[in-house]
Image (cartoon, rainbow over all chains, first blue to last red; front, top):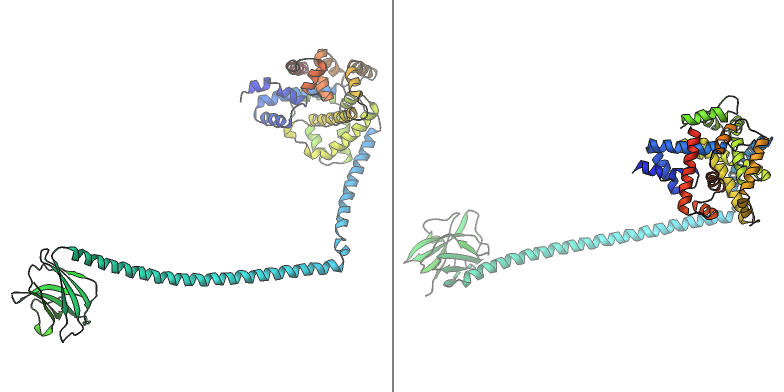
Length: 274
Length: 201
């Protein structure tokens, strides 16, 4: 803000003459409290106007002083009286209102109370209903999630099998249990080119914890270890490379497998067809 | 906020109540709102305020009534006075002037529509009457001030009177005096600067 320019603008003179707007008056008052030079100029100008007004001084008629003081006192008394009157008007209010209004007030209060009660009950039952719905939805959701998991597992299994079966040269050999495991039923997928063997135990009798099924490939009448497998139904790719096989056999062996098959525990034997 | 200049003038011109009172002391006393406080206020300022009201309305009876209203108003609104924003005397002057101008305006607009014009055209005569009034009843405290005001150029003085005592806006003053608005604004500024120079000398 350019202060000399502001002082020279004539606004301070207008202020001293009382011809400024409210906005301008606040502006002048604000600036004069910040800038001493504005304050000084404003003081000198208002001083000049005060002196100018003083030059017109005329003694008012005698007795006016007492008259005014009486008027001021009457004014103060009246204000005080009005204040007390206001208070007294407030007090009789409950007396003026009859029993009818009194009963009516109770009626309204009771109605409001009942309304609130009913509304609360309504809200409460709504809440309970919502809670029940939530529980039902949650269990349904759990069920669905379980199914989705199952389906996903299934799909993964199918996918693996499909990949295996699509591979050219993969042969599927079905092994059936002998009299020691009449219900036994499993599939062996063997690819001579990739030397990979995968088993799918469709239905194998469960074994004690220290026992495991072991697969053997028969090459020229001699058994070759093809790896151990679990009884669950998921396809298991065994970590043995089998290049030749005339037949496949399954024995029950100790957990981890044996190097030589225990023939007394032979449960399956199927030749690989040519 | 009392400047030394004003302090000096007061000792010269406003010394009316025998123990001299500064504004701060007076304001403090006024807070009590008793009769003594009122007497201080009245003794100190009634002549100045009455002079202003007379100057605005040119009517002794009306001025008497207005002075009563003004003091009642001042007494009621003392709490609104803020010493940070200006001196007490300036505030009192504004209350008096605004009340008188409002009364003048309402009388102009209502019963006597011709009055405004009469007052305006009789401006010079009124000045003479005022002068006679003062010479007949010389106020020893204000003679010095009157001499100083007398040094102000008449056209400048007329402008200040129109704006300050008749509540004219710059536009109205320009219209009345048949002058361009810019000229009026410049002259008002120079009039106040002249007045300031005269009083600070």
